[in-house]
Length: 426
Image (cartoon, rainbow, N blue to C red; front, side, top):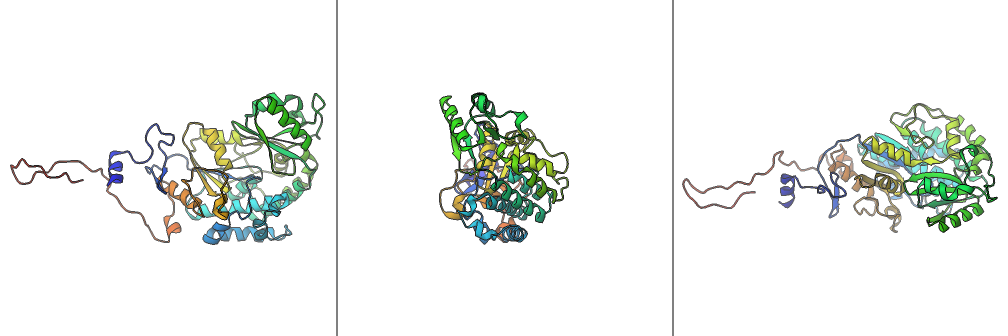
């Protein structure tokens, strides 16, 4: 009766003033909340390179037919353009360290994640992808046919993986602070299409590769340039660390491969997405079909994830799903939202597939095994979204119907004219 009393009294879910006020909250392995169903819906965040791990998505592949069917479609689409079977790549930590395999694998897992959520009745009202995740977002939004998107990603990954060696680092500071500290060695907008050069003090230049959040910026350049930049940042009191990649993506180092990427993108047919997809280049929704030139520029320019997340929050989005492995983009969404409550739901964490500790909590209520996505579906249902419970449970409708009126506390007298009160019936 305690739960019913809370519902009757209007206190179920988070309390007013709590960090999660108005949104479902996890309690005892379940989600509790008031079914509102308001707002623009769910925004999907499609994962980028760096989120991959060996075995990603395999638990979902074994358990959920919709995910398995979508991943099998991707595997068939990739077969003509990739020299290793997709399932072999997904199970190999060594192969997933190579960009030519990493990007197609991430694309496939992200596409299958979106298909799984769609089977559960959860479709995005908007989407944004990080770097290669943008192609997955466009494909899921109907802007590129699957077979052509898969071929594009495979060729893109091969071209970027063949670029000169380089390095990247994540800096735990905003873009303005990074530019202030690294000004002398930071390339300017006028260098966007040109080769790498020297900074004003003779040091090698670095590029702003991604603006991920209010306090998360990625830089890229040669290994020597990144080491020098990290030393400058440390001296100025800004923390940074190397990212485990072998190339300087979204930097001047990508200039030599842009022609190959333009040619690969030129083989794909593009149309306007069926839902708002936010661009990495502008941080705004695409105004029409993406094209070969835009995809090439995206490889060279910075990923503007922060402006996209800010735009989604301004439009009222408070529910976010990471379509792909890990929770990095959910972390950036929370960082961008600040004190505003959001529902940040992963599709899979490292522990889903390996039993190891994942990259961190992402608001899933402590989901483990292959239950991260299922837990997220429960949170959305508790929030009033039309989740297809039958697809999750195998039953037509496992929900319990409750009265639509609150319980009223009233005293009942036994017999006419008697003064004795009986127990209140609740």
